[in-house]
Image 1 (tube, helix red, strand yellow):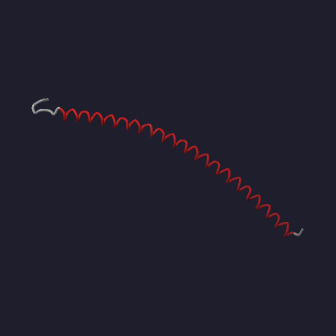
Image 2 (tube, helix red, strand yellow):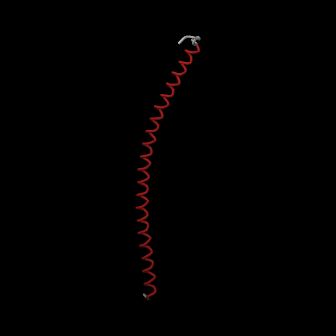
Image 3 (cartoon, rainbow, N blue to C red):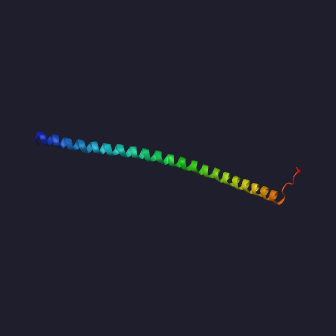
Length: 86
């Protein structure tokens, strides 16, 4: 083999090796990013579940307050205060 062919083969081997290393490096990095995103999604889902539970509590409380206000107003409409009474 002449010198030029040896250089060409060496260059091809180097390119293939470099591509294989880059692929492995990128695959590892992609796996780390996917893992990090998965962890963040799990954390966000847990936070959203907590917020949902609190919203249910607030909604229930608001409904109870509205019912109480409606009953008080209904009583006052049925029995309006007369002037001079307290």
